[in-house]
Length: 256
Image (cartoon, rainbow, N blue to C red; front, side, top):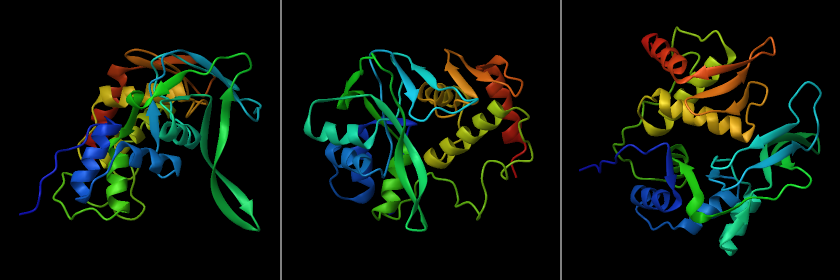
């Protein structure tokens, strides 16, 4: 009989992630194995930081925010360097944000992880431990796929057709840039967990993105039941939980 696995939450502790991947692969994985995968830039790990800090863009850009405030209690993505530190020490420091970047390598495009944001001068880097770290359910499923998991009857959606994504999955297209990001996040959560995302889960991710500076041109400041975003007319507005819920409802109603 094919083994049944429950849907994975949006975020898991590293211990929970190790247990989940162990069950799916049928071999023992540890917290160190999860950290090692992050140290190799195979998955992303976020960590709850206890104190606020300010980051500055390594290469300032005209017309873009070049400073971001990361509030205490937020969940920024940790770098591969920090993951390697946690493999050897009880704590690591949050002092940079890295993103994929394509560079020219002997005439060929090569994707590398580059530091885009770094700790502002005079700021103290917040420290975090393994217990502060979280990994997404989608990352666990990616590890399962990469390392040859069992052919389990998991509650994951059917494989998408080539080129299919959130935009082609529904006849409804949000009119605002923040609405499009919300629907994109909902689609990503659904693909990772096998169930439709609710507005609360999407808002949590939007606030995490605002804290991390993932889309600083649109998501500019986290809130409680809302996120601050920047309109095309450079106006700061709240994107509320209610507005997010209505966008998801319309998008789901237009699903093919």
